[in-house]
Picture (cartoon, rainbow, N blue to C red):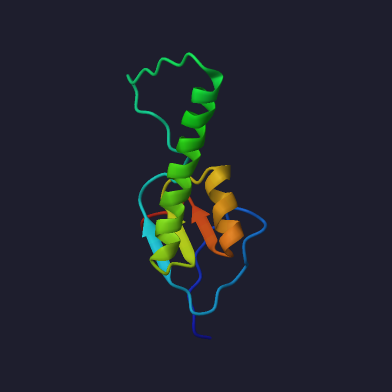
Length: 105
C-alpha cells in the first residue's frame, strides 16, 4: 500500500476521510479568527462601524485560509488548533485538516 497515515482525526465531519494525490501543508500556528492585538482600543460610535470591524476580522481569516489553499494544499495539518470558522472554509473547499498533530509525526 502506497501512502501515509497520521494518528489524528479530521477537524470536522464534513471533511474527506482520505485524499488521493495529497499536497500537505504543515503548520505550526493556530488557525483561528483574526482578532485585534492586545492593547488596541477602537472607539465605535455607530453599531454599523462595529459590524464592519467584525466583518473585516472574518475577511482577514478567510483570506488566510484561501492563501493556504491557493498554495495547492488539500491537506492541512497544524500542531496548534483550528477554530470553527476556519474549519468551515476547509470543508467548503473539500480539503482535509487536522489539528494538534505532534511535531514528531
